Structure formats: C-alpha cells, structure tokens
Image (cartoon, rainbow, N blue to C red; front, side):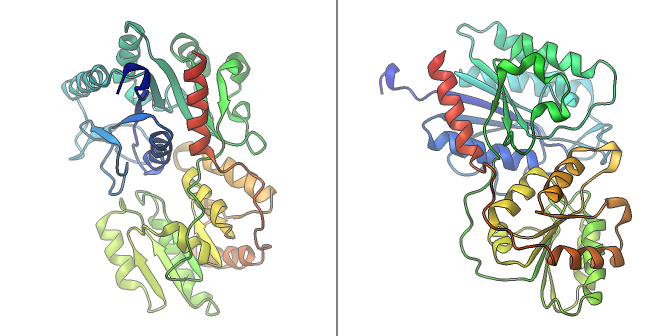
Length: 383
C-alpha cells in the first residue's frame, strides 16, 4: 500500500469510571470508523467489559481505574485501593507511549474537557505532547448530547479555554432537534464554530427476538442499579396480568446483590447479568424499565419500545433527568424519580407506561455512529 492509500489512523481515548455507557458508545463509533476506512486504536482505562470494544479494533488497555462510589469523588484501582502518584505516572507514560506508537492522523478524547476531569493528570500531558508533534494530528472531543450541569464557578470557562487551545472540533453525539449543547453548556456560543452534531449513536435496528418477555428491566452497568432491579422484582406480584419479566442486572452489580435477587425471583421472573441480544429483547417487549442513560435510551428508541425511565440522580447528577424529561414531553416515556422508587410506585408507573401509545416512527437522527465517520472524513479531507 502506498502512502497515498494509507488509511487515516484515529487514536480514540475513552475512560469509563462507573457504568459501561461510555465504552459502549465509543465502541459503536470505533466500529463505524473502522468500517468507513479508518484504522482505529481504542485506548481504554476502566474495568474490562466483556464484548467491548469488539472485533477488529486495536485495543490499548491502561491499568484500570474506577470511582469508589456513585459520587465520583475518588479514584481507585482494580483492587479498590486509592490510586497514588506512581500509579498516575505509570498510566501517563503508557498513554503517551501508545500515542507515539500509533502516530495518528486524528485524536479523539471522549468527554474531556467537558467531563472526566478526574483523569486530567494524564490528558493534559497528552495534549501537550500532541501540540509538540510534527505533523500535529487533528484533535477532537466526543460528547453525548446532554451534559452534567456544572456547579463550581469557573469550570465552564476553563473548559472553553482548553477547547480553544487544543481542540479542532467538538463532536456532539446528538440530534439538535432533541437537545442542543447550549441547553446544558451555557458557554457553547463561544465555541460554536467547532461544534459538529453527528446524530444519536444508536445500534442498528435489532433482529427479531428469539425470546420474548412482557417487561424488560435493565440497570445499565449495574454498579448502582440494585434498587431499580429490586423494586421491579417486588412489583411483579402486584401486577399479575404481566406474565413474564426479564431482569438484566448489568455486569457490575455486586455479587451479593445479584445472588439475593436471583434467589428471590419467582418462576415468571428471569434474572441475567448481561444479554448480548438486549436490543432484540426490547424490540419484542411490551415495556422497557431502565435508567435514562444515553446508550439505553438509544437502544429503546431504535427498538421502538414503550419505556419507563428512572433517571440516575445520586450525587447531584442531572444528565439522565434532563434526557428523561425531554422524552416524556415527546410522549416517548413515563418517568419515575429515583427518590420515589418502591414496589408500589414501580407498579403504578409500569401501568401508566403500558398505557402510552405504541411508538411509531421516531423522528430523531439515530445514525450517529456513521454520522461521526462522515464528520471525521469531511474534517480530515478539509484539512
């Protein structure tokens, strides 16, 4: 292959800290980029998740870190021990070494500087290294459509400063008719020329399900989903007209919680940690019950399934609540606030959600993975 025929290389950094949403979305994008003719090096730094990033993607795994709890207050290693400076230095050296080894044409950093400030210890040195590179690759940040709203003074101004200094484009994985960046990032106008909307990163339309359940209840990664799953389990006897339930706890639910829920489940309630055919299960279900994370909502929209959303709201989180409220206004979801969750409230909310009209054609752009590939191709060719 000649130099003119060389496939552009994308160095894609993603750090998941609690759930699996970030790596799932990044993997969908990475696979679309690979299919569009890019070489992709996906760098991850969270707890390994089976099935991700998928076949054909070069994968660099940094020593994993996570947050100690849902408040995102402290970083711990795979053994639950707080990370120290030596650990951070090791990760930084590995990350910069992987960057130089890849010699990328494009660098994508997921979330930062709009989020993932916990890993600025390695991302700021990486950005400095990129600025000193010759030739310098294009640098982009990759964002979901709705951000966690900041409460600390000066945080948004610092984000804008970093974008202007280091980033050529801000890829917003959303449909501007549903949510615009300025809705949750008040200084978006200052970087408007860099913003590119790609569409929502949904999966392809799912195949017909090989197994059907009336209600599919899911808890994302599962690290903070035990209350949702348990409320659904306890609501099942209150809804005798519902014949079959599927509870998908997520791979990160603590084993003790998973074992207890499995032991208590009656015959019409099936409990799983993970289902590869999750999207197909939604397509065959009467109702989805879940949190309101980005990827789960995209799965629901693509499957055209009624939904009951219980947004994750611990630690002042606002992103899932904002998404759920928008979907409720469109008549696409029923919402139950996390603080009111119980067996009785769950049963009542399920009945209300089942009464929603069956979703027809969804008038939102769900082609965000391919849309990202098209955006990168255009930006790369225009350079």
